[in-house]
Image 1 (cartoon, rainbow, N blue to C red):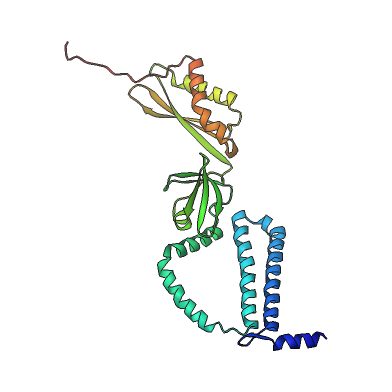
Image 2: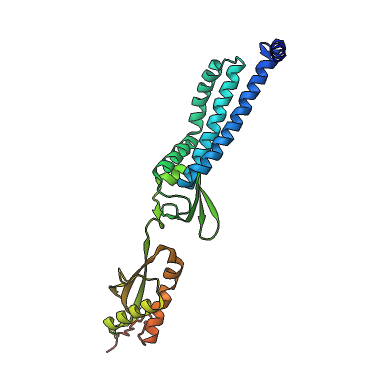
Length: 274
């Protein structure tokens, strides 16, 4: 009964040599390919993706899914007796023409692959791109572009070729970071005492500041109105929001409590008369 049904379907021609049976077989191949692609994608996300960076996992998942679909499509065309050689030649010529017209697209694609392989930064890293004046959190490295969420909440899309060729400063890879500030004291003040006062205030009110390496104080310059002291402190990277913004306030409070003057600019006016 089944054999007779298949025989009858094979004899029912639709267009040219295309029969109902061959079309049914092609439909089964495509449906099977879609199911297999979805299963492979789910298995990849379950067993392998958790151990990979998010951007890499997403791109590999797309390659697996669409790769299986392309293989299924080739199987479908083969089952229908479609000769793809002519289409491939025409497609090759068309690809050359398109390639010249879309060099930037190809450049972005290749740069995206290099970024995925080299991994100068990963999803969630805080980065700084000084060449473009962009700082923020890396959201995604896509096929053609990357997205960075700036500190003001806006999201900037960056073409991968520019992202790959720019200087990338990672603010996340190191476990500790350094904050610094410059403060001026009057020429009448005791430098050693001012340094001791500021150091004690830092250690007492900023517990996240590391004691090894300990805060560092350098005489930066003998300015027009003040002796400028450059202060450096180290802290865990996750405490950035507490260290840098309040360092200057901490230094000023320490000097105010010790009655150490932070002078205003001073000028001596000479009238030219004895």
